[in-house]
Image (cartoon, rainbow, N blue to C red; front, side, top):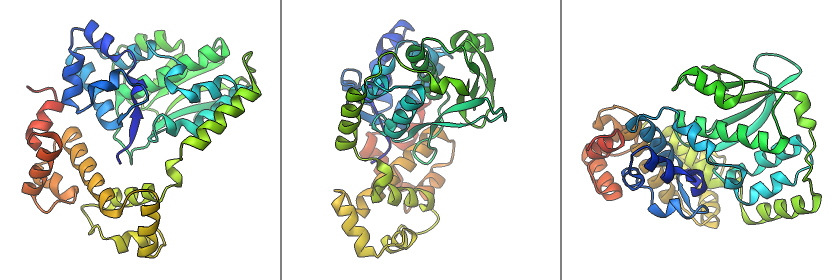
Length: 339
């Protein structure tokens, strides 16, 4: 299965799009996202379609700060049960550890971490926010939504971010720089290696007034008991091996098994225990790669077919029509804003 994100990430989306003069339903249809995603926050939607849709809304409706504006409509509660564990933590460091451990429940493609300051200051740490490029391509609007929400949550938990030194973004500004400094209340630097909030190390020891060890333990036990970290699944590693090699080497089970240092029959048994199989994963990877190349690049269709592991362009066309009910060219035009 392709990387997903909870529908809660679209909280406020419909109202904001309508306010900008757009039709939320039209955007959902263009990116094959079910309409119930706007009402069922626990439902899962493909993160690539989600992110491409945010970029398209910003472009088509002339709203370059769409991600930041959407972040203004959201809060910690979009994380569901994970929010309970975070709020009940004793310190900022504990809340970050919990969020880092279980963010896969919201989306396995996203991660946060506490890292050394990229500018080398010992009294400063970087609270990084990343999307795994193996799972989904980079999206400027989604990155601004995620980092903007990260900052809002931090302020809500601590009371203020007086120790915020700067905000780092990997892309160049989409809006006037003043818009960023107004939103984050700090200097914003662009073209950084990763998205991050650079904060004074002392903030990690800040204590929460609402700390409750019993509630945190119950919330953590629930998350651990009801959700499996994808990093522990064999299917995740098969998917990544196929993603890295499809289009360059034949997608043969025996070769993938060797890469994972398993006997082919052992690999088949492990996948069956996870309620999936090699061919099912292969078809998912082909679909995800084909749609990714169609919607995020201008590669010729023949090259897209080859890179996604199809025999020829005709096979790609038949597959895309089966998935989306449209030709590859039509899918490409729709996601780029064409009629």
